[in-house]
Image (cartoon, rainbow, N blue to C red; front, side, top):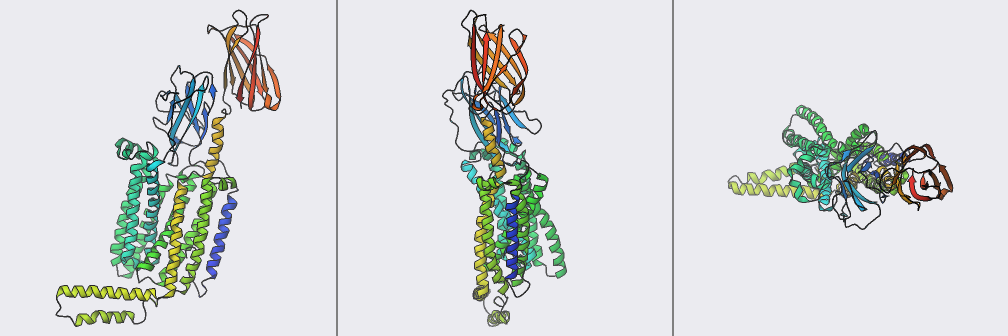
Length: 640
């Protein structure tokens, strides 16, 4: 039913088969395009680099800690915290400084001076450009690793009870949107008589109420969802104000305003429109409702597109309208399916023409879903490895499989639709007979009290409805259609749940970036300067001191070397001879000699120092303090 063309002849099978073949080709194209790849895309931000790196041991305390991310993020006062071994703040507790330049997103926090040796913990939390909270932690050590009393919460950002309620509200919002938009479209396009049917009114109104309530819950919980994780903070006015200043907060407020316009639309659809009897007036009102309702529906769909995955990453200007079209197609298909189910089970008046019109709407919706889904899948996954090796890709596979099941069930629904007639609902002479039955008691009860007359009228209404239901249920075609549509609706509920999970799951393309970023964050930053401090003792008089080495930019290729020698009193120390050698033992490269030139007292330099390959290089330093006093010291450094 959902993916088939409208009935146009006595054969109800050929068109479903053709539609299924078309959709199978489109699904195949989805997975083919996944191999095409593209430039890096971002959805959830990923930590790509840190300085110091995770697990690094530095000789001297850094002045600041910096973190680099794969996309723009929103940070607050406590977004980056540095804790000493006892759990006390080692940073200055100021808002992180934005150090971004070019295409690099980088933030840093200043550290207190004179930090003692030990292991320090860096905990960070931010909001990525697609509105989802992200967090993480790592450690580095000054001097040497030590024990630490810092115990960070294992709960991820956006998790816990608040996260569960927020995710439920997110699902309810999608469900409400589907019922509101799909139910309204079903009445306007497929079954205009449904405007006066109470079950259809209830379905659409409940969709509006669900979407409105879910949006309010999400707006109130947004602050604790992205921050403390405590329900009490939902009513923190300062936190709510900060939410309103963000893109997700603005989207939620815009959705509430649009829902006000949707309430007016519902009132006209099930009020003025339902009472119109003049055909021309009704056509004019249908056009106005279709245009106005379409604008409102697209606006509500845009509140998701402007604040989630579609709004960030590659081709955002294309992805956002594509996402709007995708959401509207989902609503027309699944919301119409729910409306058809209600109509088949709750109303006796829906005819075969309305069912066939929905078949055409559903087929068009599936074509739009296939086209937009291909683009979205390519954009968010982009490779076979991301499709099969990430949670997003695996959920996408499940979604495609569910669509296949839904289409298989729809094929059976389409067959029942082809057999459907209206004789079971309005048999010949049935209305006349019912009218005679309804009027006969009135003629015989002119003298009956008004209370008794009302009671008899209610009884007659119940009797008439019961007869209609009995006749309707006795129609095997209609009963078969009801069962198959019920099965479609059950699969659609699961499909909607998986789709909701996809919106809150890190896309496969970015998850792979994050995996690479995790490696980058734990290794020396590419192109980062190398800073070493090496104490020495030649054994002679005034033979103790410290060698400090800077190698910039600290990557493969040409580098500049600076060496300072300080005496035991901390003052610059001149020595007769200084030599260096670099060895990459894992690749049997070296030793590569470096002879720096004296620039000033205690300061030597060399330019054009070539590093042929990235790796863990051993740096040997030979210091001679007299004709007979000499020592060679070494230290390893990761370069490149």
